[in-house]
Length: 378
Image (cartoon, rainbow, N blue to C red; front, side, top):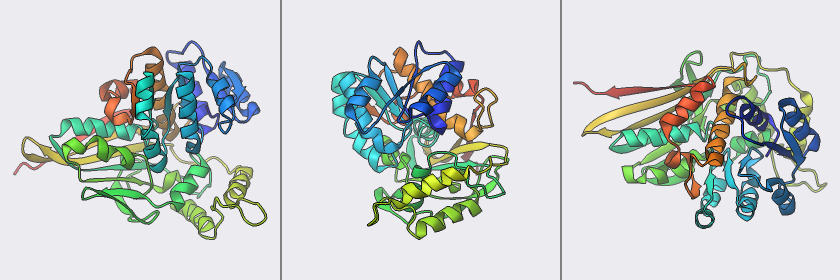
């Protein structure tokens, strides 16, 4: 569900590796759904997530719904999945929506259904990293996710994922978990230079509201985790491009509240940016998801770092950043549909996805996962 930037590539992934028996592409725009489906060879139907009956018709006899629409519809799609006895997964809920989704755990357990929250890149790959790192450490002091990509030096405004979500990340206060407690900080704050894998190298990464912090402190509570944060390199934009968007937000154009004349500033702004049709960014299309955990093994302090890196894919016809958002959802949807992954209830990826199998499936599509360990020798 959702025939946008990511949904298109999820549908394409289904056609290239272990194709399911049937895939239906749904979107509020029938033309967009049809264009994606016909290009790949699947069927297409219109679906309106604001209409419960439309959602029920769309899900029909499906085994799994892959929700690649705006995260604002996560809860109604989950309700429809419960009514139609359909396994569910999505690409994340920007912390607050994810927390509300977790409250449906008992209902999914009672129905014998699985819901996976946030199985893209971040959240998704980063969460699988967190579960893996937690299993390697006796205790966990801190875990920080760093999300980086090569950017267009010409300051293109071409967006890598939903503009609506990007403006939420620009304007809403990030939640961090520090010294065992959740708190809020300023948007885009606390920049630091982080050594991403080349060709990114040292680059600024700032705090952002994200789903990882909603679940990882809960999932690793038994390991004693005290600190958890999510940091990103300018949402995939160059710094110059981000500052342009930040300025537009600062003068109220990212507001979701209707004005007296009925105009919703953000809706108008997004429509205008979409009409610009900016030129494709000129950069290598490289992505690095780095998750760093500090803890103890056998009484000794250890720092572990997992990196999943991705270059553009000729098969999927997109850059590395899009590959590691779309393919994780397609991989796990297959596992849910086939019964390979069976865990009734509502779960974040770090608690139920086997890391080694997941990394191996990603590697078939190109992304590589490596681990780095640092110990004090003397």
